[in-house]
Image (tube, rainbow, N blue to C red; front, top):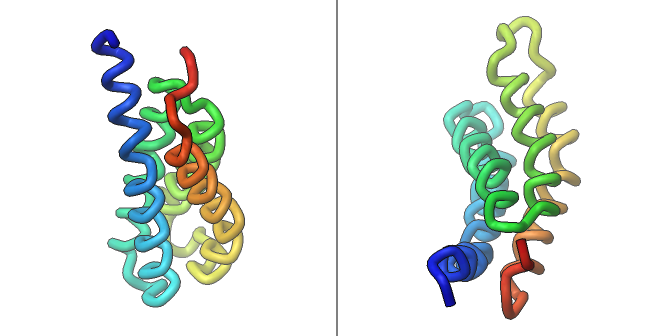
Length: 116
């Protein structure tokens, strides 16, 4: 096994934890929607996945993370008066966050990373 294969396997093994982290952050955000720091942390988690997943051959995860990354980024950059209500944002993100978490879980259950 070469270095790249080792890195990809390590990334694969990290996916269940990434899933748990996203789900935990999402649950916190839903409980305390007005704590913007929770939204910022979710954005950082999704942003990292958006870039790292395709680099390790998990294009489907990157494809799910990318629109979430973009939507969160747009919302966080917008002026307060121009933003959707945080409850509306959370409502629109529920399905995509669940899909991303599911993809992380399923990929993490794979025996080997996808070929590059």
